[in-house]
Length: 263
Ligand code: NAP
Ligand code: COA
Image (cartoon, rainbow, N blue to C red):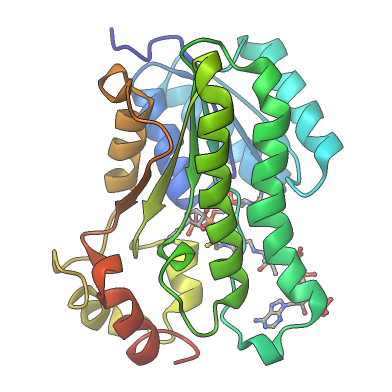
């Protein structure tokens, strides 16, 4: 038995990469999972994997830019597994491009997914959260406070996500809902890293820009997500917690200019 046994954990963007790793961590701890993303094939694969790891898994296709799709996804999850104990909002998009190389739609697509999508997920999940006691975790990025060239859309969107975290921690604290940001650093073997690293052979060079001298893993992020959702973090709300080996202390900007795509 763990404290997450039969708890309902909902992960938006939970069908690949870091968010799927987080979903796996909760499933292994005995939680019932609900996962959502756009691709029905990715949803089906994640549901099959998570269902084999834990007690039950549900999933549906939904684009977080569509508030009605988010509401329908949440209603389906609650019908399947009951009120939500842990909500993870991690759907995101990224591509390296100079601001002058972005159309209004290009900038808006990342703002729409990362920032507006996070608002939709949290706004419409609130009524379904088990209160008091629910934990909300937004997946942010170092770009929220480390300015990076060729990442204007992500920097602006994730800065907004962290302010949503802090604002809603204030608004929802009295209802017994904690809201925190988990900030992955450079995480190996993820779509985010594939998109930003110009040359995969430079991964070792990138690792040297991290004070802890290695890239992160999805399990590094999953362990911290379980901590943020746990009783051990019962007095933690409004925190923006890097899981980056110290990268955002300085190495992030070095990497962007020397190692990553667009530099
Ligand atoms: P990923 O595997 O591409 O994960 C993104 C997830 O979001 C996928 O499940 C994707 O599935 C879903 N998604 C994308 N657009 C969506 C939309 N409009 N509506 C609903 N779902 C959508 O990438 P990742 O690298 O693991 O990144 C996961 C999270 O960590 C993101 O929030 C990212 O900003 C953050 N992060 C990553 C790194 C890193 O090193 N990788 C570093 C810092 C922060 P579909 O394609 O099926 O929609
Ligand atoms: N440089 C400049 N503009 C780009 C671009 C690039 N590398 N890639 C996409 N765009 C532009 C497109 O041209 C389009 O603008 P336009 O209509 O003016 O031509 C706009 O961005 C939207 O692209 P589209 O492919 O229609 O959007 P989408 O909503 O289907 O996809 C993305 C959103 C672009 C973020 C896509 O990369 C995605 O789905 N990503 C999810 C996975 C991911 O990024 N994972 C890493 C998470 S950190």
